[in-house]
Length: 271
Image (tube, rainbow, N blue to C red):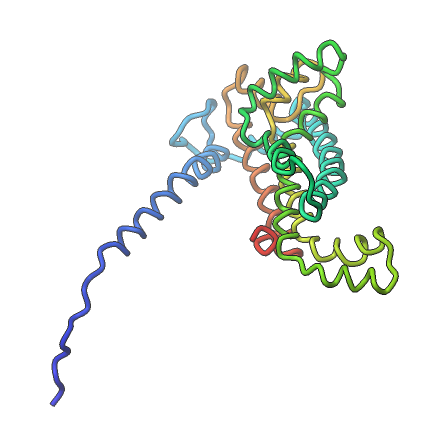
């Protein structure tokens, strides 16, 4: 004869409530993307939801829109150059912050990360006032400097996270065996922190490519980037071509992140 259990498990209402909350949060974050995706196939002449029919004509129009193609070219050039610069500056800066003790180290680290805390509109206004007398507005140099300022914190942050989990005994052993500082960095340190460096570079590229506020202020009339061209297009045309372009950009970003995750282990790099 089986005895009845002394205690019956209680129903925990917190678990389903938490699940519902997570679902609503995901829905809130993904709903705008899903709507853009659906609208990009709509046959409506103007941006509206829900769509009235299905068509691929907006995707076919994109190669014919010279404004989008020119903006894409400028954005790609800027993003690639910015990524190279922030990696060249950010990785050594992170190494210095992690390995050396010096006065005002906290202030220097806060300075490097300050662009993440300052509103983009404030940075953009300051850059316009600074770049104007230097004749850097409407130039590649001006856009690149502005984008470097807002992307270098990501490289420093991801590199610092990788360095925090690095065993320095390998570097010490390499020095004992006679390796110089450059060899130690190139053959020992860099391979260890490579996931964090790659992750920072990918984030910097995406942020630079998508940056609109600084690009709008610094080079709106001379070298409009793709986000600026999109803003211009929406002001003058209200069709779904911009939705189709948005879907393509989202897919490109997803592909880049997935490839980096598969090859380098992005989640491991960001731990």
